[in-house]
Amino acid sequence: MKIVIQIVLWVVIGVLGYFVYQSVYGPVEFNKIRDKRYIDVVEKMKDIRDLQLAHRNIEGNYEDSFDDLLKFVDTAQFVITQRRDTTFLDEEYRKIYGVDKYKEDVVIDTLSFASVKDSIFGSSDRYKDIMYIPHTDKKKFEMDAGYIEENGNKIPVFEVKAPKDVILADQDKDLLVQEKQIKSVDGVDGAYIQVGSMKQVNTNGNWPKNFGDN
Image (tube, rainbow, N blue to C red; front, side, top):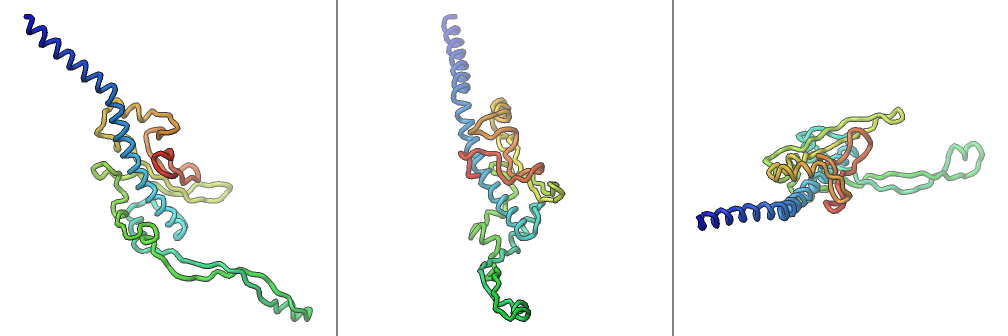
């Protein structure tokens, strides 16, 4: 009986030790994994934002389809221009008054063209899987685009979201629930990592600087 009791005690001690370890080091490991994944997600979101801003610059609106955004990357070009001030003789004024008068103007010269792909990604082909959330089994970002009205004007907006449930799907469920409820200056509030907004003119992300420049 004494040996049996000792075995039972050692099992109890082992189980308690495991739970103590999990309660102390579980959140630490969770946070390490979370931070690494969030940084990777933010980097890809910044690429998506760069593409959306280029699309608006060239096409005048944002895109709600990743397929169309990829076509845009492969075909679109920036126009590289030069602005210069110039003066010229006002012939009409001279005819009327017989006096030379010079007018100032601004001339925009087209210098060349540069592809969107080379300008944003250089020689990298990372844009080809830009729609997939890192560290997932090819789960896609949620992306939307459209317009909102301000002062009678329609203004293009876009929004890209990655659910924490998807990013951290393989992690401790209790810690994940806590993460979705977080309110912190050095954390990502809410259930999503997000850039842009469909409700206001905003191209910022909801992440703090420790996860990437905003």
